[in-house]
Length: 473
Image (cartoon, rainbow, N blue to C red):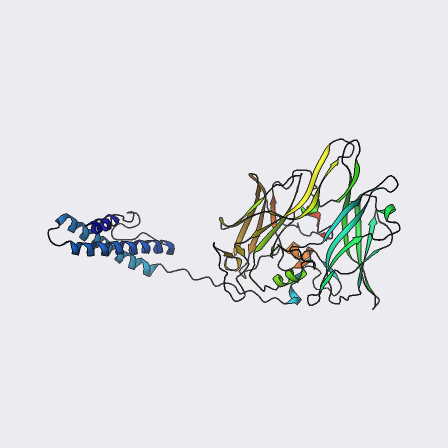
């Protein structure tokens, strides 16, 4: 009796009259069809169990229970008839066919205005690593005043790199040379990709060093590539315009000079790339970046963006949405940080704290595509593949209850993130790096030059074209 009563109680659960009025199912979509199908399967199981339990009860059961069972059977028969009609009318959507990843060769991993040039060009970004210029100070004395050096990191693409080639670094101020050039040779080379990584200090071992590098303001840095054996020279093939800052640091009654580079041009630039950002290889990341650019494996998407702020750690978060629905979120990690410095503002006793910090967000559920064999990894949560979901994406960076910036990108029918025209006309990079459209909210807690980020990027080498970097209002 208990089994019969339990199943009869479950049969009291019916579809709402606006969905099934006893004759017709009022549904139009395939998901709705699947939902009522599941209802029918459950109802059928409870009905069969009730009928079986009724047969075991024997004679003497009252007519009321019998009539209830007959009524439930009639309800199910009517539902089944109505479902058959709808199942013929509502067809399942066509299955999405994932876009096959294009096989990328070493010859076409570069994009940008200079990518087809035969001479050397600067690669502004290889994903995790960018072209960078950083001024840092040397302590001074009464006899030898404080001065600065430039630490430069850059990448050169050139088909004919030789181990004895040299890059000469010249620094100018107000159009005047600050002395003899500093020689620099590559730190590491990926020969098949014709990509070399340089990490150089300039000036270096200069007799006029202490005299010349004590001025702040805008400096022009010109690179000349020399093939010494062949006697070939590419003069001023790359030019940077950077601003060296000088300020008094320390106690107000005993300040010392502090040197730094102004990186305000970074604050409005954000990128998304296909890379895992957890290593600091000695080759500047060349090998890893090339592997990802050739799409040899499945990997996460990484968003990188900059903020300028006062001292203290301010954790940030990023959430990405597709068709208005969250598909992934991540904590922000400090990728690069130009060290915090505290100084006295010129002409006043007011102390200023500031730093430029790049945050990266590894979107662990967001992938450009599955593995090359089209298999998908084993994950504990749903994964989102861009090549299976073309359309518009929006990512939002927040901190402490505030929106810092919104980032936008689009995936086309070919399963690739769309590059803006201004990126292709302005910067040289690997094809896996995409400049994001941004809507800025609160990028800084201290003053910064809002115009410089719209004028140039990557240490002043890139002059943005056609309203680059792209923005949304």
